[in-house]
Length: 298
Image (tube, rainbow, N blue to C red; front, side):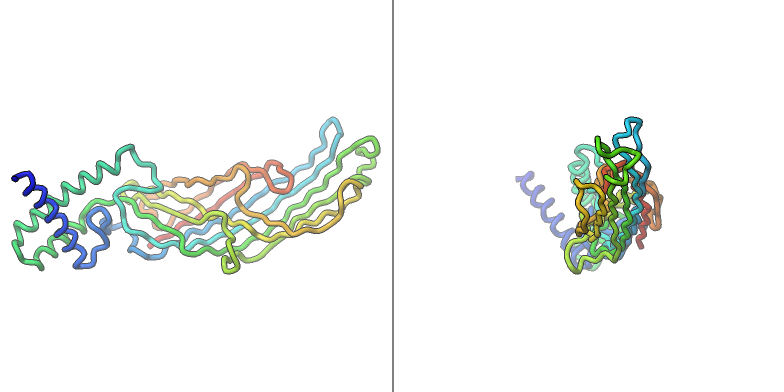
């Protein structure tokens, strides 16, 4: 029937269109083409460097005189992620998308594909070389706005310096003789971060550039599983003196796990700072996590 012939022609033209594109090495059909001039070459390297600093401290003697606590937190983590550029896509993965955006783009792509294929056939007839040239012209100018970057390797370094003095008072111990029931705690550690000996990151890095809007979505790498030494020196009968091996990481209570957004134009070399109120791991007291990041792509 006429309808059946039309569907068959549509299927043939779409199939022939994609085969022609594949024959000259295109990465994908229409929506996955390297369309934007600002896009990074597919499989090219991008880097994301993040410095995390956790700082806190204070001297707590409430009016009730039930305790005396001093503490200081000075931790630093640095992570460098090497990432690989993906093919430009019509629909973003990390950027929020309007409801139904994917279906609408698919419909538009199919209609555009048919129009381009039929135009190329009308111009070139059965000339395969001509068809390939026309298809490449079409694909080079086709739609696509979002380019993703996925992590391939992560390294870094860290230093941990945490101190606390704690005295909790009772009938036998007060502010006047607090040394008799006080204890000191230190947590220290430093070194390079490498995943050769196992996982050293709680989460990996991801990024996505909206080439049309000039925005960047970043999910930062979170260093973790890092060795540190906890030492307790106690005059209190209730707290034992001793040394234990523990682990520390940059992701603290209150830290951002979700991706955050930056407006950056071409987003070739961009940096920013995020500051978050968190709880430290030593005492669970208020601290500040500052993340300074730099993203670079080709």
